[in-house]
Image 1: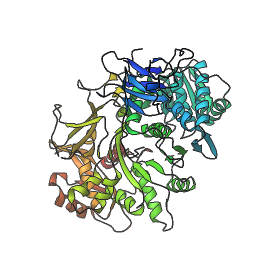
Image 2 (image 1 turned 120 degrees about the vertical axis):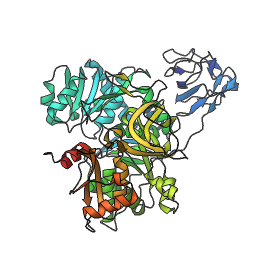
Image 3 (image 1 turned 90 degrees about the horizontal axis):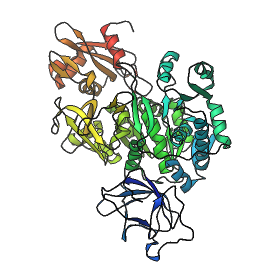
Length: 103
Length: 497
């Protein structure tokens, strides 16, 4: 699954994680969750699959995950036990910007 | 999607309180799903709500997104004829309204009409299976009709990508505490009314609705519901402060944050509010419908610093709308589109992912570089603080000189006898336009037109001194706090109004 279009929703093939693409790089990337390539939200995960032991950091609801260059940004819409990576490089949580409530 | 996330994080938390009714996040989510199924089954292409701030608004808003059709909140104060002409532009449409209007609206072609009660009962029954929902960032989320002061109302188009970008850029998911509550008193057809619902749901904050604003009702509800956050337009704040000042033992102990916007805030009002509510954080938010609400904010610390400071620059900040949000750029441009430097007055331009600048039937009105021309005049200081003068269309052209009414109004309001004022241009044989002012005097002391003229003359150039001054009991404001200059102009011109 190539997450190049903002608004695309993806799910993990091995845990409960679901994300929505907020910003995407221009080039194809190998986006994984729990060590396995992510699949389209409409697809069903293969039965019996589980997270790779090296990719079990977990995802948190409402957090935004970015790559080092800042080209890719994902919003976690459902948490799971796998962690998000591009190939084997982990994505990091985007820091919150404290802002006064304006509405 | 925003609501689904909130539901999975805090399903049992109260999402909405309206009168004695309350809905948890799980209930609101179920209601939106079932309303979406109902609306989809009716085969309509838009969902319009013609109602005060009621549960039909958030249910309708989320149901529309779920059904993949635009949500259209319409002004319930419009006349029958005005409403009909707007509805004709959005059919086939599903209309939700208060019971009085169901029969009249049902006569319109291509509409399915439900009363608020029937709509909410159907939604609350949760029997219909919810449709699977699309997530198309380019789909239209919201159509908001502008007030149409200069012509037929335009329908501003906000797409899901604009609203999501605004929410993600300004709110942290689940940031609200268990007891946080926000009081929504702006009407649902105002962009701030919609933004408040989205922000509160994403933050996990309880929404408390006040259908008809009065200062007494607002204060009473804020105290009873232990409200922590609220947004008001300047005219509302003026009345709230007046009401609080009239009673020494009235306080708002839970109110932590009060945001305001939607029109120019008179300095004396915000100064009095800061003094009367020392424990509350004030935020000034500037934005437009076309920019998905707020684009710049003046934060609480800046408010307190301005009030406490003797430094002129810091003090002046209280009249500023602050600095742009992250992800939003603001630039002052001259008439040829060239960027202007600090302190220079021009037109405010805004750029960013939350900026739509699109109208139904007119397309996107953004410039080639993505800048949206706000038609607001203003300037920016050296540190990036934005000052809004007012609508460019309100500028008075006197003998070839452009005069911003806001500048003169500011000076007049500093006079201790002046409670409120409006400056407009009136036709003048000699100058083309002459400066005229409608003044509302406070209770404390009288003032003569001559005294006020001298006051302005001493502080601004003589061309800015009002040639005509009339005293008035009150100025005409719209329900969303906008000064109706058209009416002031008619009055000062001597037209029947």
